Image 1: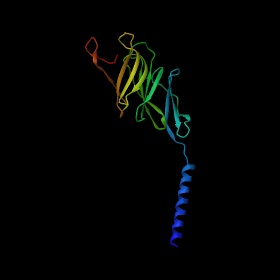
Image 2: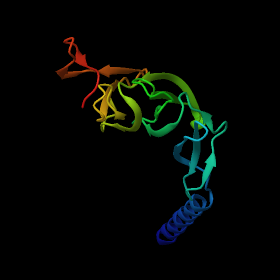
Image 3: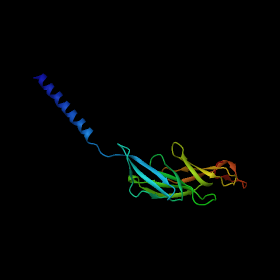
Image 4: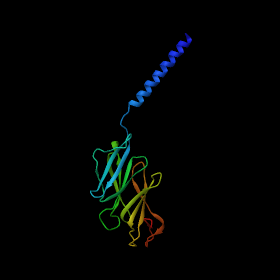
Length: 185
C-alpha cells in the first residue's frame, strides 16, 4: 500500500509538471523588447518603431513619424533609463547656434513628446554621443564659432530627473574678453 501511494504521488507530480510545461510553451504573448528611433532629414521627422520580442519585427508606433523640433535632424540617442530621447539637428543657418539638440520624453507605447531645444556653440551639428551613465551629452559641430574652419564639441550636462540640459564651459580656454569658451576645440 505504501509503495502504491508513492507511485501515485510521483505520477501526479509528473502529470502536473507536464501540464505546466506544456502551458508555458503554448501560452505565448506578443511582447515588446524595445523601441527604435530613426531620423529623417528630408522631411525633418523622427520615426518610431516597436520591436517585436520574439521575431524582431518592426511596427510603427502610433503617431509616427513625429515632427522634429529642428530642421534637418541627423542623429538620435536614447538616454540610459529609456525615458528620454536626444536628437541633434543641423538647422538651416550658417551662423553659430543655428543647429542644436532637442530633448523628447518617451511616453507609453514609445510615443515621443517634445520637451525643449538647446543651441550648440558651433555651426552644423553632425553627431551626438553620451557618456556611459548618460549624464553628459557631447555634440560635434562641423565648424567652431571662432571662424577657424575647425570643428568643435559642445558639452551639456543631462539631468535624468527633468531631462534638462546645462551647458558645460571649457575651463581651460578663454575668449579674448576673459570668459570661458562654451565649446571644446
